[in-house]
Image (cartoon, rainbow, N blue to C red):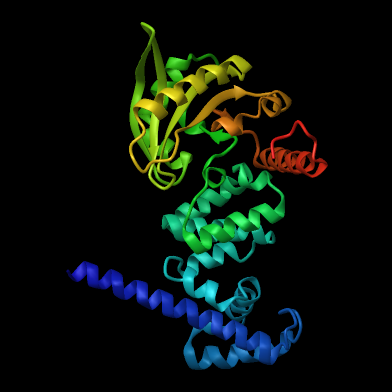
Length: 332
């Protein structure tokens, strides 16, 4: 009871402090800087910081005042801040404020609110470039805004917010030559970290789930359930490049799960084909999204961060360009 009360008190204090910092930043921005950026009136802010620091302590010095102004500039909507502050503390906002891309910032803020990420987890997600790896980031800006608005207003996740490409599996410690069985075993040994990499709401159900059709045995590599999507999600592991035949096999698994395993109130099952490589044009022609199949690469060894960043940004630009061209063969 004591610990619970202390936690509630700390949460309330953190929310009140976050609100205060936003209000101070908004007041300085509106009445001191006259809606100009913090660089304007630098001496005024510095003087104000010295006065407030003398009276209220280091938390209100010039450096922190500038951060409060940036807070109000970055999150100008008081209602959105009021909603976010129930789950996000000041340390969360400090991690989000430097982001220049509004859509990326909104993505991390809303996912942090919905999933209750700690500051440490939020920073790990940012450092791992989660946004750039989601299917959402490859959509046109208008559609991204619409999905984020749905998440904000209805707390409803879509597969595009959850599924990634690539998945970063460097924590498995696999090197050189390994089999699909080695990959599966390594994932199960590190199941907690793998669940964190998969994202929100995943729970492990079964490995090598047996399916019998016409007397023939088939086995699903890994079966998960996503509580937020309310769907079974199967994962098929491939140590080589994706091949069109892989999708036919997985589509068979999905139909079997839909008929025999889906419970009342659940959405149709989805699949992730996790492979060492894929050819984008082949995947596009197959239009697998309509069948609920997501093809993604995995990386067991990470290249330098800047190489990863360039790769992700190039993939996003290419995907958006294909959509904007309205090529008839591209998925809508």
